[in-house]
Amino acid sequence: MKNIGKISFKEIKRISPSQFYSMKNCAYKSLLAAAFENKPLLPISPNAYFGTVLHKMLELIANGVVQSENDFNRMFDEQVKAIEKSLQQQGYSFYVPLQKNVRDFGMKKILLKKHLRAVSEQPLKSGGVKYHSEKWFESKDKLIGGKIDLLIENRDETEVVDFKTGAITEDVLDDAGEVFSEVKEGYKEQLKLYAYLYFENMGKFPTHLSLVDLAKQKFTVEFSQSECSAIYEEAKRLLHSTNESIKKGIFAANPTEANCKYCLYRPACSFFLKHIGMDYSFNDVSGLVRNVVRYQNGNVSVFLQNGGKQITVTSFPSEKFDELNDTRNKQLSIYNLRKEATGFVYSATKTTMIYE
Image (tube, rainbow, N blue to C red; front, side):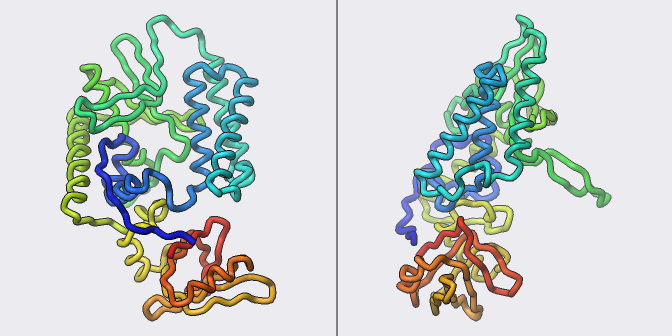
């Protein structure tokens, strides 16, 4: 059972290009993350932890640290073990081993290894081509900054490359109602911000912006210098207005499925808690505990009252009974549930967390 307590908001000193799009959609999420020192209030998906491993391996391959299959296998295992150790320290041992909890673990490893083969199959790099991995760039006022995954400089051309371990495109509708795939808007804006940071530091814009996925597919992002400058100014205004909300003590959020579904700070968001009192499409519930029952099979169910709705949450383990029984007539919020076929009935999962 966890408790949020009083939230002390902190000024956000700098935002990164990778953070910008999410912050634009809901700045309050970024404020909560800063208030909790970027320590999530809910378990992150195991796929996200594995994504960290994949991204680190791409960096090591690009840097030439991993050059052979033996190097790859050794470093891959080391990275996975390090993440699993961290998960156990955080109390998320239910994610260990990652191999059993990550979808397509083996396939993603195979795809990742193709990047190694691609490097080994390339002819020796000509003297005119320079590769820079994980290079830090920040604006002169230090308000915007982040690491570019890979910079490729060749005479008068510079390519900014960002590696993505998940889907890069999404299906969108055109004006005629036809469906087509397009690079996600957030990724486009991220690269354009990197392009402006490169310009601020180098006095010129890159000539190419690219995204590369695990399957080695490259996606080009078209851009203009004016677009990059406009997004940079927008990011600075967003940072200023977000910090102003702390000074004024006036906050706003945008509770939608897209913004909230994967937000790790939902338990601290009063806007979200109010929203799930009316919108039952989420796998989170909130309400007054009316009853707690332990059945003969040991399973424990909690019965909540939310306005005129009766909510049932089943499948808590037997050892949770005393703790849950002590919360009768208290307000609880329960996160990461599974919806059952019956209306307003949910079941607990291994990632379910309860906040008072």
